[in-house]
Structures are given as structure tokens and as C-alpha cells.
Length: 435
Image (cartoon, rainbow, N blue to C red; front, side):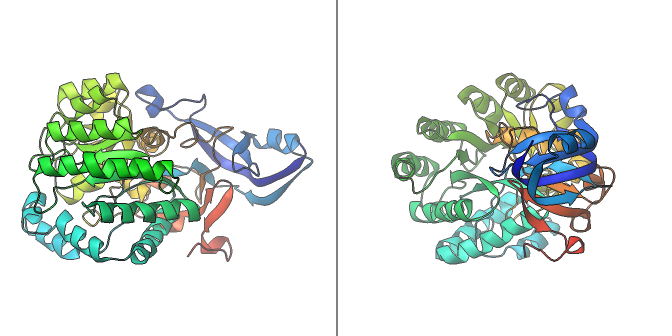
């Protein structure tokens, strides 16, 4: 096939397709056994999409007359889909390292929250920060995520709790969407906590009557494009009724429902999400058996966050039960001041060790299923013809090293590629670096 193309990856020891038949998600046996090609090559076109995937000699013959902007020899290496981080809070100011000491001394999440720490501490500092300050730190964090293999990241607001600061955060996310080589799914999370001086009912009314109409207006004018709506449905924060009202109002203006549920207390959030047609629910440490059944039936993704359960010393979400009952299980880093982790390889490792997932299940959860949780599995999350050319090349003959090596991704990842363009290159592979 003659013509000019953006990228040729040649002779990969393993090409981990994840999906081989255009699946929207993988569950049960599908997540346990991933599609994989040995001795394979792939081509990404000038439009950033994958044009061909196959055995190295077949691709060589098919594209014998073609020219490429870049060719990378992947002999002895593995190529995987770009990782998808389905839950982050990456736009904020202030530093909460002091709270880690409090946690280690035995303080609970809600005790820190009630003592003026937690979300309210970050809200205070984020309100004071300029848009430029927030954008600068956000950009730096995204680069660190990308360096660890993430090529699509869900990014929430939620440290404003008033319209002005929530919009400031969403503008920062929009700027990164437009200016950086990384995929972003943006989430309005104005119901992250009840603002000081308001009741939960008053905060709910403010969001429905003021915040959401403004978001709709900005979307129509093309200034801000928000993808998802989130609520922290939790005892002492937003109850089931307030959560229902906010999520339904967000759905009514075209936002996907993707919210925090059943984290610290059983709230029947999973049942509510299934009823409302939620795309995804995060946390779920305290999910009920009925909630698991409801999510499996509704094809509502469970975004599990092993970093949070680990750092807050919570019980782990019942990943095995979810997988066995047919829930679509995804993973996220939950990067935020309370769970400071940029690395999806470390998240996958924790999911395997602490939540008893297999490595295949963890990779499916951090690629195709995480993309599904964001409504993007038609374009992201697997290596298939027609999908976006987002890829990770690791310096190992077996892909499992990406999970097996706890904290080893900086030495292991050779290239991170977005739309066929190298956006991070390890120093040993040459001089180009994203930092």
C-alpha cells in the first residue's frame, strides 16, 4: 500500500491488541484472556488512526512502497494500547502532605475532613489560585501521567464548590484538551462536597439552578465541553435523593453520569446509578450484592481505585465478585491530594495484589474497560484498525512486566505514542524527551 503514513512499529515481540473483534468492553472470560499477536507490526496513518495490524512479514509486503514519518524497530519489545486512567482529580492548588502523617497516626478520612482538612483545605487554596497557576501545575501532572503510559485521562473539577472556581477549573481542563497531546475526558464535579455555609439541599439547588444552566450555555457557545457529571454520594455529604436530582439534571443537559458511590458507607449508590443509566460508578468499596447485580445488568462500569483503598486503609472493593457476576470492571488512579499516584502500572499492580485480579483482567480494566467507562471505547483502549494510534512500547519481551515491576515503569517504558506521534521517549532511546 503506497502513500505516506505517520508511523510504522516493526517486529514487536508481542503486540497486545486487548480486543480482537471490536468489543466495547471485556468481562468474565473476555477480560481473563486478551488478544495478542507475536512477531507483529502496525501502521498509523497521517490522521492518527491505526491503518493495519498484523504479522510483520504481511505488513512489510502490504506497505512495501509506502513512506513513513517515523519507523521504530520493536524487536524484543512489547507494544500495548495506551493506558486509560478512568478517575482523576488533577486540577488543584495547595499541598496536603501533612495529612498523610495524620492518616498514619490513625485519623480517618472523615475526621480530617471535619477538622477543616481534606477537600475543604484544597478548595480554599484552589479558589485563591490563578488560572495560570492551576494550568501550569495541571500540565506538569498530565506529563507525569503520560510518561507512565496514560494516553487518555478522565479529569474532574470539584475543588471550587462555587460556580466561579468550578468554571475556572473546567477552563483549565479545556485548555489542556486543546493544547496537549493527551486525550482528556472532562467531568464537572461541583457536588464533590457541601460548601461551608450551605446545607446539602441548598448546594443541590445551586448546582441545578445555576451551575448546570451555565455549563449548558458554555457548551452551546463552544467555550467549554464537559463530558461527565459526578457527585460524591456519601453519608454526611450528598445523600441519595440529592445525588439523584443532580445526576438527572446533568443527564438532561447531555452529560454522561459517572459518579462516586458506596465508598465509606453502603448508600445504594450502585442501584441508583443502574436505574439512572449511569455510564460508570467509582469506588464501590461498600457496594451491596444487589448493587453488583444491578450494575452487571445495566452495563454500568465499576471504576475501582486500588490506591484509595490502600492509602486510606479501607476494605478493598469486591473486584472478584464483580468480575464473576459480569460487571464491567475498570481502573483509575484517583490521583488527588489524598492519593498522590500518577502511575496506572502501579494501579494495575495493586489491583492484582490487593483486589485479586489477574494481570489480564487488570490490563483490560486499564484499557478497553476504562475507555468504556468514559464512553470512548469505540476509539480508544485497544489496538485495532480504525482506532486512535495511542500506544505504549516497553523494553521487555513479555508485556506482563508492566504490571509485575512495582514502580518500575520509568525504566521499562521506552515510548508513549498519541495519535501516532511520539510524546515521550526514554532517554536511552535517543535525545527526545517530553520533559
